[in-house]
Image 1 (tube, protein in one colour):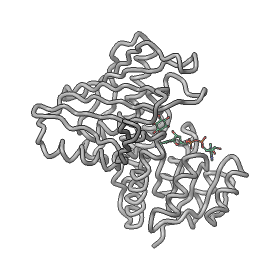
Image 2 (image 1 turned 45 degrees about the vertical axis):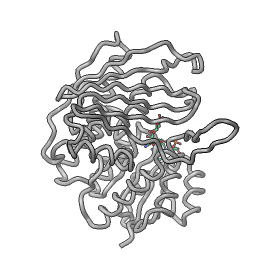
Image 3 (image 1 turned 120 degrees about the horizontal axis):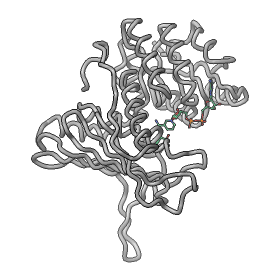
Image 4 (image 1 turned 30 degrees about the vertical axis):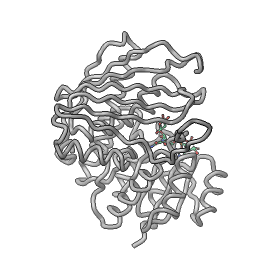
Length: 339
Ligand code: NAD
Ligand code: ISE
């Protein structure tokens, strides 16, 4: 069976994922596209031989759409995901699942009422080969119980529309998800402290920010978010355990020696850094839809947890930069354990 995917939102990542589903993932075809920008939808659909729909509800309701991909703006995600769940269709939603914890909980409740998982959230780092190796080492136990994690998430620059809360909501949210998964542990408190800001930023933005998280088992995480670091897109993660440490590998790159120097290129954006992870993410999602199974990737509950933790992080930033307790509801049985 070929999974017929309808895409809501044909912007930057929507177009990336449409190309990916068309060229890099077997077993799926993008057959429908919608965007509030009708011309963009028409142009994108024409490139892959898909039809266009006037809006999300019409696309979701169509009988010849097997699964839905939501890549519209964050504040619109909840409505589309809820409609897909009501229609009983598998839905892959780019992060964030929703922009408020209340909307995330509405989705969790709708899925619980449906009785099985339909929703997967686009936290692609769980599919990155380096993070998967890191998890294997942690699960294997050779470095003992994890005690501390040191991370950095650096972007070369961000546009004027990026504001200080987005450091948590848009950027650190990836570490928040991947660390919950890696450590199989829940984040229970969040704090932001702000060092001197770089002069190479828009005046309204606090950048860099240092985020400090604590988990239920007492692991301490420090995360530097620096979105105007200038030199490239750089993701670092080192976990220190009782008997050793494990570090995320840098992406493979040729070493060049010339003019008395030895160097490797630094990637410039998330598209290149996580291209393979996105491919794997969609291959595994399509395989689950094709088989009629529940998705195995990040769940609606993970989307809820990430939103509650980013909310606490933003509260710390916007108040007195003190630790803020994460107030999470009990996890429903549908979502199993933390692994
Ligand atoms: P974008 O602005 O380039 O594209 C969004 C598109 O959605 C636009 O074309 C817009 O017209 C359309 N749209 C908005 N509301 C709509 C609606 N109700 N129905 C149909 N179309 C609608 O944004 P983007 O950079 O592609 O980001 C989209 C989402 O992907 C965001 O939630 C963002 O956080 C996420 N994202 C994830 C990653 C990642 O690393 N996983 C990277 C970038 C963006
Ligand atoms: C962007 O939205 C992403 O999701 C990228 O992965 C992240 O690195 C970047 O900081 C965000 O703005």
